[in-house]
Image (cartoon, rainbow, N blue to C red; front, side, top):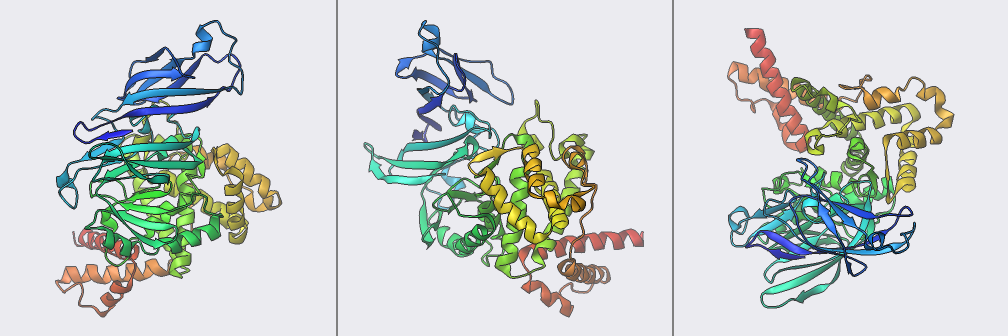
Length: 504
């Protein structure tokens, strides 16, 4: 692929090794969106192809007719391998590629690009089977301006090579099967700082040291995750801190997590986002939801892992329940929002997304309702037993995909001796009922009660005109984590609103 900053396009070719899955196959169909296709070769022979009329959500199917099926040659047979090569050029309107002018970078002198494939945007980066049920390995060569560094969601396979006047080429290889939404590219003026033998932090020169400081616990998070989920299979875990226009807190691209610079607090207090993205290395990337209807299997499990990692790393046994309680409040907010917009059906854990853009279904529901299901199962079978099950689940489905019914069957198969504890657990209600879960979780409130107490003091101080920070209790605030500080501030606002209503 060749990155053209002036034209804001990427030109190149993609070559697939394709296995015929059924005798008599006649076509190979890929997803595209706002992509111009040039030539298509099948085993070196030109093939006929057509891009069908664009669908507003799904883009245009690229329908490649297999030459052998049209020439009267013997039919293709199951297991046969083909090489399919497609030349293409992206569009400046690609939904996967964000082009930043120098003014939107920290350095202000060079342009920058990054990609975002989730959920169905990789089809506007290259022709691909853009569904999480299809996993791929890949190798890539990317040519960029000589001043730039290219990073990808893979391991570097060779040193950068000069590629003509003012250009150089980077080489990458990803040997672990992954869905196409995890193909990621970033190009810019970048530097790195190594923080452990398998982790380094990348960012612009003026930001990289701050990022290396705030994310210095990455190896500690990764080690804790391995204890909970099993061996880390991706080789390296690097972090790229992007310019502020990156629209997410983080994105779990394999080998190279993308994060927002808004996490750079200077005191490492927002590094829990790294724990979340690290968790995806197992739940989401290694074990992947088969379709976007089952997204909770990516995110619910990842919340469970994140909270266990942070509990271990902080050494605070109350962290898991405190953070889970905040998540439950977030779930209630999402349910209320969807209800208010007439889209309550999207609060189902397994929603019907036929004709729905997966991006429109994005909310805290798969994260927190999914976590709530797992937490309820853990409560019923026991914490120690559930932790052991988590490792077995990941081992069973690693490098593959899973849906909700398969998860259910695997869980019940592992806990046949726990039928009495699981009696009354309504799987269908959890999967298919809209709204909040029927079972309201009970959490340890040690940390939240501290926050609520201080929030009430602040609210009353505001009402009487006193300084909110004058009370000695406020000194506790400085020692708390960022999540607890945020919760305290939110509770203070709620308390002020309640007092105002009482006065009225």
